[in-house]
Image 1: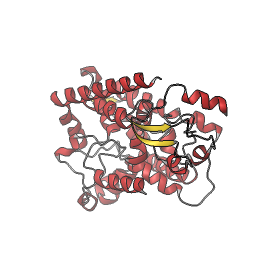
Image 2 (image 1 turned 90 degrees about the vertical axis):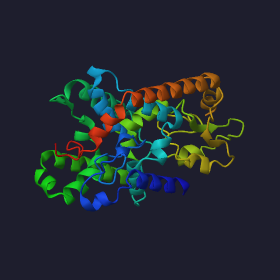
Image 3 (image 1 turned 30 degrees about the vertical axis):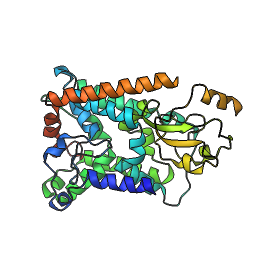
Length: 288
Length: 48
């Protein structure tokens, strides 16, 4: 319940420019120079901050003029403090996918294919956020944000749909690209009903960045070996299909806290600087 | 990874991130982020 509240508040704070939804324009104030930690399109009429994914693509486009320290530094600092805690608690599009997953339906879990699909997000990060904007998607000296243009369903939902509906000139300009993006959004929405946060787990490049920091981030999960009875309740509860007793700081863990809630002995805890002692996990793996 | 090494690595990363962020702010990069963000990104909304 606390997480739901934080997710809702975060979504509201990111998009507090409510009048933009009525006026059909976007916020143009100074706060737009600040990145928000979650995936939230800066062209959303309500957005008061910048999306780090959009900002990163622009910054890598300027790689010929030197590395942009601002966005990369922001991601390193946020990642090393929070890791994928951001995904679980402060991402509006992740929140939406979780709500959609609550719709009663058969749920797909622990599929072997998911173990392979999770690597797609790293390919998306490397190709669409770094390689294409840096070297190939440059038009008249301006970087074309490849991920935002061809993939990001959050941009379509938060910015594309409302702006096209509210703005006649934009409505007149829609074409094949908009249809493609609607298709990607529809796929993300439908899949979210059956699979837990499919976009976050398999596609999101911001999730991939934070996943790289999950093992060393200040906020993490601690699994205490002396309290763990190897009952497997945490692994059954984990919708991200990981086993928190074996691999509590997996790159796939979004720190939702479901494992903490179901652990009957209180062996799993979520908090700051909770790092496993060396040798904990391999010993458990042997025990299973 | 040993606990002490992990904590050390975390602190190094946090310091590096904070330094890069600070360097970016000092060199005026937030204004270039803002310049991009205050206009409707036609690519982001599926038009451009």
